Image 1 (spheres, one colour):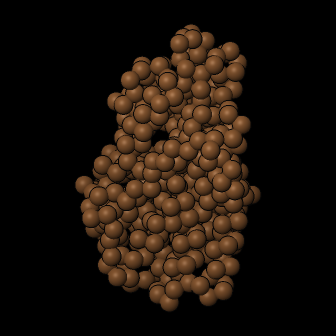
Image 2 (image 1 turned 45 degrees about the vertical axis):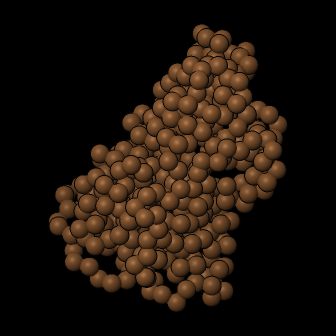
Image 3 (image 1 turned 90 degrees about the horizontal axis):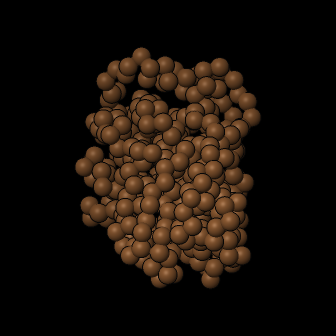
Length: 377
């Protein structure tokens, strides 16, 4: 699998991978064609044609290993060994594209890709990946995948209004679509086969109930991506079930020093806050630093896992985490697209296929550490 930022493609250069957390560039995964030929979609706009040309210019380049996570690299190596050992099924070599709303360097999406790569090796699929945390760029990347005539498409709907039209164009072109992670409420309306992920409202409600069980009275819900409907649903669900007070704090998730400063200022201004809930694993450690600098005794709780969160659960730095099992989201998305292409199968009966929520605590830490080290949790 090869990924390039749009800026790098425009320069026709092939540099080493970078992972700057402040980057806001989309990344493009090169794609090929496969499976049954389809009618060409309507002519794209100039901007879309340009992006398509950039994709075509680098087709056939040597594939790079997964750049942002050693866990993702290990999973890709295992997937390649499976294929080399003849474990792939004897079905056509289809190409499936995944386009997400991830920003640069988000380890959560490395785990999603790990699952997708494992399933792709098993199912004889060429897996290509692209991402941008800018809604218009994500939409353009989806259009580029459509123009490349991929055989299946996996998308996130964190900002559904920007994605509705391009998802409709994919379906008009005969490309089956599965949504993952964000957009469970919009998925069926947009015509997707199914949605794989957790119901964000239910996940938020689980957090509210867990805060009550822990005796918390005043919680702060930190939203790091404005306009993300899933994040709003998480905090709203938590507030619905939590019998204490819950405030929302909006921060710029691309700037960790500013995130820390904002949380620290809030904790210094209000000593009644006894829980800080972050909506992504990378932000939990930042919240813990802010708490310590503020001299607060608030518990840090978070959505999602990574190795650092598992370690922090074990040593008590973090109280609990909400695991939505991102590996499953990637794995099942590929598997369900393959089943649909091969046999017309669907799962869910029109309802989302849920991978969470699961509340994990210190009691689960040892097992989680083993899984996070291999890049699957």
